[in-house]
Structure formats: C-alpha cells, structure tokens
Length: 182
Image (cartoon, rainbow, N blue to C red; front, side, top):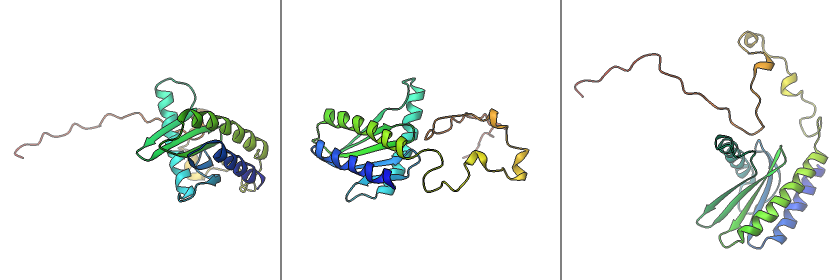
C-alpha cells in the first residue's frame, strides 16, 4: 500500500529531526496501524491504546468547551507519549525520552501530523483500502428483528469518529431497603 511507505518515510524523517525521539506510530482513529517505527513496543497495542486515549481526549475537550482535539501529552517517569491529530481519520503518536525538548517535540509533531493527514487524504479515499469490497456500514441491511426497535437514521446522533457516546445516568426504579442489624 503506497500510503504505508509514504507515512513510514515521514516517521523516519521525524526521528532524524527530533533528538531523543524513541519511536513513532501513525494509526487510524479506530486503532489500526498505518505505519510505525517503534522498536521494543507492540505497535498494535499502542495503536489501540492511542484510540482509547483519543476517545477520552475528545470527550474532555467537548466537556471543557475547548474545541476540536489537537494533541495530548502524557509524561511518565521515563519519558513522554505525545499524540497529535492527523486529520479527521488518523493520529500520530510519538514516544520520547524524559530529556527531550518538548517545544521541539510539539513543533515537529504538529508538522508531521499535518503531513500525514495530507498523505492519508491523498492516498486513501472512499472505496479504497483493504475493505473496499465490503459495503459501508450504512449500506448494510439491518436484520429483520432489529428493524422495529431501531430509530430512523435521521434520529441517530452523529459524532466525530473516535469519540465515545455520552451516557445519561438513570434514576433507580426502586428505593433500596434499609439494612438493619448488620
């Protein structure tokens, strides 16, 4: 796939531009690896964790009314994990040592995220990719037993890919019994 090689080239160039960068990964917002340069780390697991963190980050920026997700920085005792938006469908995750220049990490991470977004948009369009022969989820017919219970398509809430649904707490239908003698 052409997008993999182009994105991998960008990840390798990124490593030369940021001293103390130990790894980089480009993935979809759903947690599928596009390309990676992460020695000593399982890329599929890192991509899945990135997708989970991305969902929480989207919720946090929405709840705090801070606009669209741009980046997430986590600092551990041995270094940093930085995640940057790469368009609407991809994300860039960088691993760096504790002594990395964080300003440089942000600068180059944002630039590479924009380049990866362009690469993904250029190479992966509608009807391409490894699942191009499958119908889109909206085009699949619903099973007959679920048709009556499903709301119409216009009533379904829309949200950006990679975000979690918001759940409203429900009041209990019964009052708990007081416990005596315990």
